[in-house]
Image (cartoon, rainbow, N blue to C red; front, side):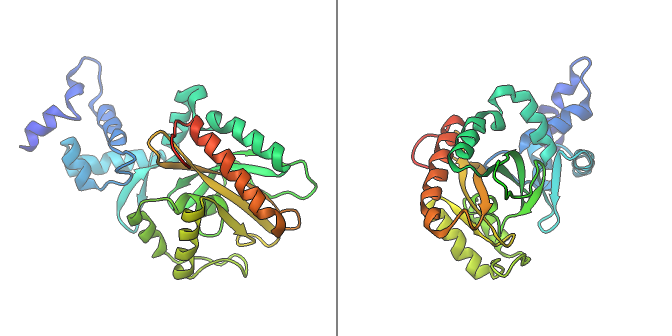
Length: 269
């Protein structure tokens, strides 16, 4: 059965003149990941593609060395890496995530006069993929490509709170580092915080990652209604004061809904 399955799946295009089987199989591995199946194991890939486990191991090792896949050391399963996103973003041109969301980022920074970010989930981090700097005298240090923890950043909480339950449970089993006295490191407290984020549709980093810094973020959805990114603003606590948080949160949610619509999402945020 395996030989017939193999000949009908990943390797079959390799019979065409000039097509390299190894490249075809590597691309088939990448294409096996989806929104519904963001993590896959070697056995699953072997069965799905009709390839031997040793072949899948070698393909994953090669793709991992170039950053196209990432291995989760806890589950020994694989997911797409940032390199796949980077190459995909180049291919999508003006339809890419950053280009689609750029007008919303510009609207948010114009309305708040603060630094704004766009972030995506990668492993258990949020990665900043776009940023517009504030012209205010006090600013948040950040850069595109930088990683930050999920549990104590607004962008991170806005991403992880809307993940499938099994992903959320795995996340809450991790050890959480304290960065400031306000960082939530108790999984029970963090669970309650993420439930609140889900209910209200936005997240607050209340000096949890850096003392004196407050951030507000909301999730972005694509045409499948999956949360694919988060968008937010960051500023010093003296400017993002208690009496402004609710109004700024409503603004961030509105802008995130606008950005989600640009990504093809329909329905309520």
